[in-house]
Amino acid sequence: MPVALLVPAGLGLIFLVLPLAGLLAHTPWATLPQRLAAPGVLTALRLSLLTATVATLVCVVLGVPLAWLLARVEFPGRRLVRALVTVPLVLPPVVGGVALLLVFGRRGLLGGWLDATFGITLPFTTAGVVLAEAFVAMPFLVIAVEGALRGADTRYEEAAATLGAGRWTAFTHVTLPLVAPGVAAGAVLCWARALGEFGATITFAGNFPGRTQTMPLAVYLALETDLEAAIVLSLVLLTVSVAILAGLRDKWTAGP
Amino acid sequence: MTARWNHRTRWTRAALAGAVALALALAVTGCADELDPSAGGAGDGVRGPVTVFAAASLTESFTRLGTEFETAHPGTTVTFSFAGSSALATQVNQGAPADVFAAASPATMRAVTDAGNADGSPVTFARNQLVIAVPKGNPRSVSGLADLARSGTKVALCAPQVPCGAAARTALDAAGVPLTPVTLEQDVKGALSKVRLGEVDAALVYRTDATAAASEVDAVEFPESAEAVNDYPIVVLRQAGNPAAAREFVAYVRSDRGRAALSAAGFQPPRA
View 1: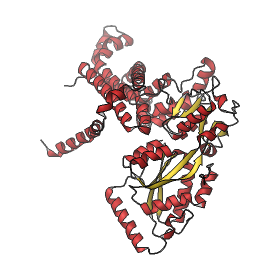
View 2: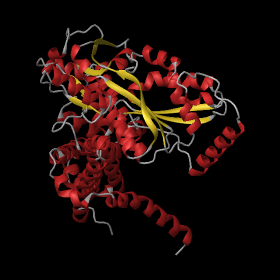
View 3: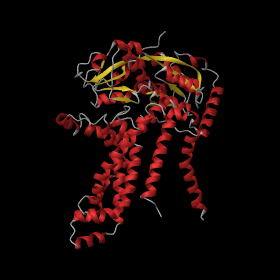
View 4: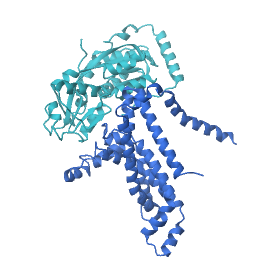
């Protein structure tokens, strides 16, 4: 085995694992049960799981068709659309949060109309958290699904068409089952990104326990006064997400 | 919002410390006025970078003081990291390469002194008081804390973990106003920005922050803020890579020129 690959690979692994080890080393194990039972921990965790899951559903409903459009339909400006879809990936989440405020805020382009017409305001609500998470997480799903669609054999769809299937039937009965593992992998990535979302959430949805304070926000605020509390919260988030991701991975996205 | 500081390696810090020590040893004069609060210029032997961790509410006044300090002491560069005091205290206690720490409350400063990371004891250099920040023109005619509890009025407060949030809680309790804010922001600038963006109708912020944003917000004074006056302590840190310049900077903040800049920003002088 070439050392030139093994050494950097080992260093890379250490670099990724060491901070987690640091977290474990500083965990106050003795007071862990009391800290876990502290008011707010469960509330924040529940809110995080709920919003990340709803955001992922939103991303799947909107993102899969978008990925299909990018992978299967030739239209002018497709490259530009694909670039636009990936913008939230490179945009600092805080900027994303401000951008969301400028559109969905009380004085925003759409937000003002929503408020005046329906009396709906999104900032500082749980729906606002879902919106912020979906905004930053959707590109992960679109990219994963588009990749799966491009890798899938289009001859199956063509065969379905020759047998009289319309485009919608071909999509639901042939294409979608074919790329299901890709959709699942994309959804898992999307969910993980949504779960860890901080910047856009605190900027757009604010921070209020039980309503918009997700785990990452709770960690950040705990850090202000109590390092150990922040470590415990991080550990909870880490454990839950690793457990869920590992469970899903075995089920749907098992590699070779 | 996110803290930022110069990343310096141990080597350059050691080299810097050596250079400063050498400069100090060579400078036979000019050391006497180093700790004099009124010393405003002539810093012999004071050079190199100074990294200052300062409360978010000091952003405007310290940025200005930093530029003045660099002019008064050629060869120095002042770098700031502005954030919520508690976050900064945590970073200092985790060994962040800072020379000076200026906090928005004695409680957050205590986190640093208790951990043994202060070089000497902190001194109070300014005081700050809360005001109600409302959009320009005060569209909801807010005249006191009680108006904030009216239904349909959206209010942003600082989180209770940071000094402005603790002060807000004290003032609200003193007024006996049961207020449910829509958001608890992680620092005072976050609360203020929610007013500037029009997302809330009011926020409790420091008078200095309202002054800095005077083109966009109006400040409504309220009597209960007297119950929650924040002392601002400053200290040189033990981990300072450039302690001489750090002390000079602290002296500059406490000098007449420093006082003038702080009072222009809306701060009150420390209690005599």
